[in-house]
Length: 310
Image 1 (tube, helix red, strand yellow):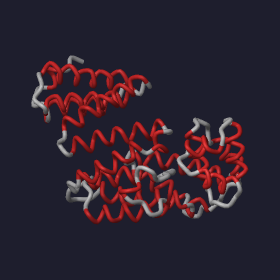
Image 2: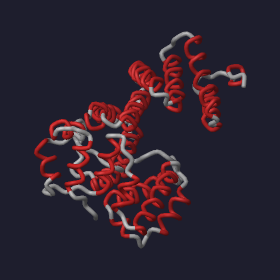
Image 3: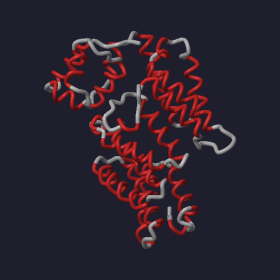
Image 4: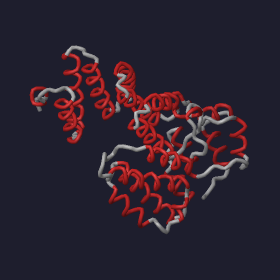
């Protein structure tokens, strides 16, 4: 495992014009911890530093090119492409690329070991004959073990203050989904709310938005439709402001379904569901347009052709 020199962290902080106190607050560590990092007395690996760069909206590509030799850089980019395949459940392509990387030193890095373990678990869940894509109690235990590969001592009670890096978020996301599958809604919501309140997560817009959307899903799965609606409205306004249209389409769909579940007038849920459909159509995402049609028929109990004129 390659570690970085603390001078890189100090240089980044000084380039940003931040005091140790301000920088430490942004990355959610104590000033004493940051002091140890900058003086090479506390371990920081390449993935942790790359995450620091992302917090301040700085590209990690130039750093990776300088830090890694040519072969490592090539392998790392192969891994990044493989990661996209497993997040979209294209497991055959994921397996193919990871097989090519089996002899690469990169595979020994904890964060990539974590992704490999998570990928194997997700593949097994996805292709399970009985109840595909539904997690079991055994899966939940395995997810906790996977989290500990790179995230030590993860605990529900510390989720609001823990420092998360790299693939930790992927594991936690599926951990929450597993809790939801097992009807442990109260615990799932409690952890998710703690993550939304985590100051380190709040500094990363993409991750913060993801956690808010997951919380919407947790409320919805628990049939807490009023809470799901309120959170979805809050997320919707933020995503409109940030022009994150794919999230806007999903949130509108949730808002529409919550209107239906709460017994509100058809005018509210029909027009909102139509907006969600047309956003996906505008983005050219046919699969999501089809999912809206399916939801109209299965959840709204209406004829999609009567609702969608497109």
